[in-house]
Image (cartoon, rainbow, N blue to C red; front, side):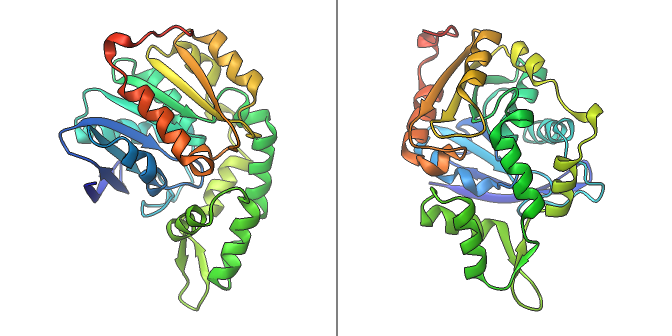
Length: 289
């Protein structure tokens, strides 16, 4: 599988972008979660080959992208970053996938740009999940209690193992390699702007919060919502509510998976995404069965 890594400057910040697949193939843009990174989608990118140009980028404050000195980590800003990236890459139309926070950003972008997104995949995100679910409470607690640094790699691995007990060791190590960087005096710290992201998530400005119900209702593209059967974030009633808000939405539950469906059940997630994105246009039915 071909891979390309490069940097772009968008609105004054530098962004790290990763692409997989043929450059002239159909584009699929993928948006990671609140503490994620572009590399997290390598498995599903591989499953989509041949025939797809998968594009993922470390969203602001994460991975190898720049941190925002103003701590501007809100949905409207993330969507503006996607708009700038799409314009820079000159993507007339594409498929869009987002996990958790990336799913919220994807919904908001697709609602705002109905002519750009052909098909939309939302992994474990939706109205209410961000604000009121057990998973949202868990994420806020994690952000408030996560150590800034670790004395050793093993200490960081033990922390991540306790945080994500269902993830395979291989996926956990990949996550650590993408999320940690060495400290000059020894030990490791996060590669993402933990303090800035936590401050925004724990004490958000009310005026900056997105109306996700209105965004879901406004979607005009075929949309697949995938939730983990054990997820504490997107609850079954929330998923059902999304279908009532918009007949273009189909939901799928993957068993024995938590909030990180693509990590907990990578083969089943990749199979579902591939089947949805690669089905013939003529066979597409925006209404639920």
